[in-house]
Length: 209
Ligand SMILES: [Mg+2]
Image 1 (spheres, rainbow, N blue to C red):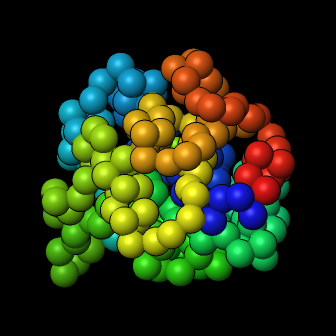
Image 2 (spheres, protein in one colour):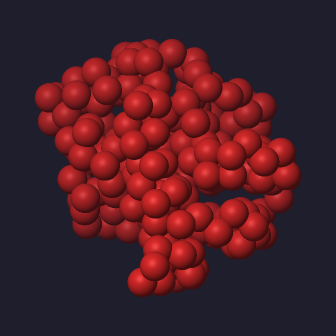
């Protein structure tokens, strides 16, 4: 295995959905904000709080999203991750998604909790939305690059990042290989700037081995 550390985005990369859009029940205003952020037209921190303040997801909503995530894996993702793990690669999920919704998905992929880097939500005692972790780098522009660099500072080996969005592309400088994934959505800026661009998940294996 040439690459020992492999970082994956989650929404529209490992799964066919954008979690925040699912929580918004397809509200077109939210979907437009997500699309603008993932294509790099609006900085992430400008939409992050705004979308959650509009949606105000309850803890029940987030639990339902967790179940939806597990059933929305991209074709080939589960087998590809298992193959990489079998070859000795260490997988990390680096996402601006909601930690509580992503942990069960990570578990189903045998990715340990300590390798999940996501944004935790806070709820009150009745499960109503209170806030998100405002200290998280992953709700801000450039956050994935910082998290990638932090992981590499305490791990050895070459690293690769696989993602669909402009927030993923920002992490290109932190890794040896950036693979753009266009199997769910093709983002032109990612396609143009990735080292490699694939539309079939299984194709990443040939570039990582
Ligand atoms: Mg994504």
